Length: 192
Image (cartoon, rainbow, N blue to C red; front, side, top):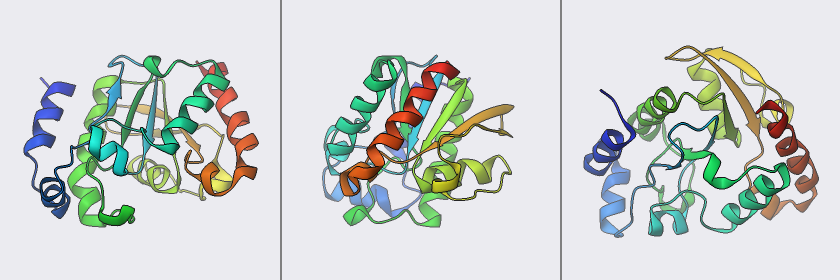
């Protein structure tokens, strides 16, 4: 039987792509996911950053602080949700994930979703939203057009609701997005 613990053990041993070598070379930790295993809502980012790779926990740096503020704005406790990434290891220099890396790590995320069975999966940023849309056979219009809306698709274990959101890091570079992000996160509480 599949479990989050089984996935954790597999990720620790995984060497399907060059990111595992980078992890070992830099003494980083894989960032598998964190939160309630029966969460009604799951947040999915792109890949771990430096702070995440150092701690093994998702969203620990500046983007993590913004995510915490957005969750608070929505009246959602971080402990109530499950947070993960498409990639489980940090790409060098925070570059975009490569196709080989997505193929290697994507199945771990797919299995996490099947185990957790969230009511909704919030895809934070273009990359994670595109991944989930493609997985569910949906056409992705880009994060600016898709953000804050609910999409339904067939994905592995059945129907899934996908809610694309701007990645919290977007507010670091463009503070004008902050109000849009707060509005989108407030909608989440209504969904739950």
